[in-house]
Image (cartoon, rainbow, N blue to C red; front, side, top):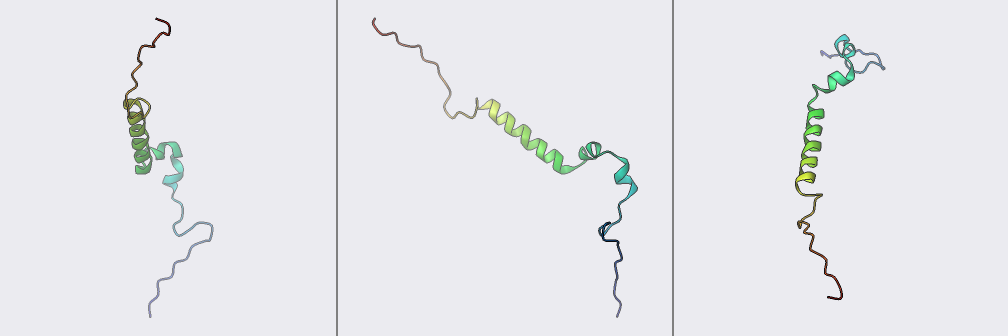
Length: 71
């Protein structure tokens, strides 16, 4: 029988680290990650909803003139 044997060191994981991943800082690699852009989209969407709805109020705030007592 033919068996495929995978040999790797325990601390390296299944794939040895490549030099390309280590040469670019994380903050630059994060800009190419789809998860970061998805999270940024939802954050900006939540901010836009919060601002447009006036602090998430369902009923617009109307300031009525105060009635003076004694007239």
